[in-house]
Length: 186
Image 1 (tube, helix red, strand yellow):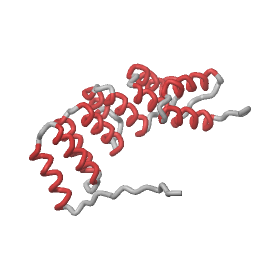
Image 2 (cartoon, helix red, strand yellow):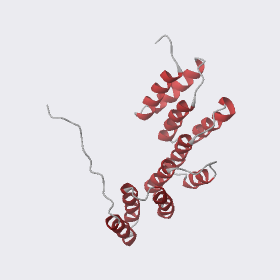
Image 3 (cartoon, helix red, strand yellow):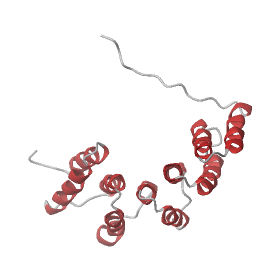
Image 4 (cartoon, helix red, strand yellow):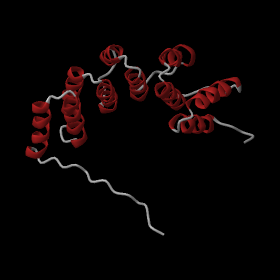
C-alpha cells in the first residue's frame, strides 16, 4: 500500500498478535512508529495482547506506561484487561490482583475473567474462588463461570465445592449453550 493509515497498521498488528506471530506484531509496531504514524487505543490493545501471549511483562508494562506519558492515551477497560492477562499468564497473580484493585474504575467481566483464567492455569484455588464470586455477581446466569469454578475446585480435589457449583447450575435452571458448527459437507 502506498498510503497507510493507523487502521491499516492496527489491522496488521492485531492479526499478527492473535495468530501466533507476536514478535512480528511487535516489530511491525516499531516500524509503524518509525514511519511517523502515531498509535491509538486500538494499537495498544493489539500490542499489549502480543506482550501477554509471549509473557513479556516488562515490555508490556513499558507500553502501558507510554500510552499516557508519550501519547496522551488514557487507558480504557480493554487495556487493563490486557495487562491483567499479561501478568496472569506470566504467573504473577499477586501483581495481577493488585493491578485490578488499583484500577481507576470497577473491573468488568472481561478483566475479572482474565484473572480467573490465570487462576485456573496456575492452580490458585482461593483467589480463583474469590474472583469467581465477584464474576458471578456481575453475571449470575453465566454457565461458563460455574463450570470454570467447578474445574478449578476439581483440579485441587475439592469435590464438595465442585459438586455444589454444579448443583447450583441445575437448581437455578442455568443451561449450557450447546456448541454448533457451520462446517458443510461438500
